[in-house]
Image 1: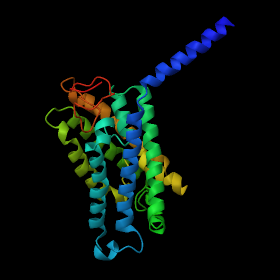
Image 2 (image 1 turned 180 degrees about the horizontal axis):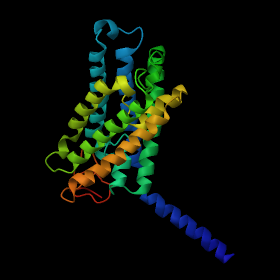
Image 3 (image 1 turned 180 degrees about the vertical axis):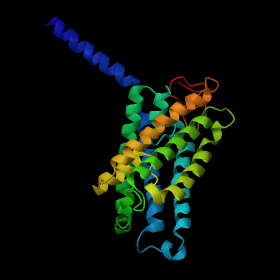
Image 4 (image 1 turned 135 degrees about the vertical axis):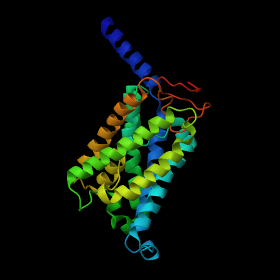
Length: 278
């Protein structure tokens, strides 16, 4: 009996110790930030390409509308990065980005899980709000589902997603490993992602984010070729980590896992090399 009570006591004690290590505010910030980006970004898709809306007639050039969509979609992520939500969590908003920081030794495994769960839930929430607000207009663009371009073989689409995620993560690492560049990371990601949407959307839909693709796929219940948008970005992120290590050769290191680091916000990441609150 005493042994049983001791075991129960140890279990309860371990439970509370583990939960003290969980960072619910950061996970919630990732959830809300991802929901905001998905809703705003897919709203830009609906506004620029939805059937029955005026943009098709106001701007007949599809390429220009793609560029506008990219600027709005990527801009919403950059806004989150410099907001209180982003300053708290680091504004990963993308499981591939979180995985890359984890591989680089900047995240605890339980925080990686918390971030990913928050990002996927946020994407579902953001897509649900999109359907609620835009209704049939959202349905006319399949609620923002990412789909391979019909003119391209699937292997080419896969490589495009790998390459774009590789470029995104490597660029983030280069910026957050420099004291001079790190404050400009949100601006860099804005222009980079906008360009990738502009040029890459006709090929793959420019996901580079498993959560971004999962949310619309789940809400619409459409899964054809969606495996690609889960595997390719994660592979691209891992390749970027390897490339950064080869390029750095011990001479530079990722200083923080936040896309916009400010010293007076709590930082839950490991091996942070810039001033921060614990």
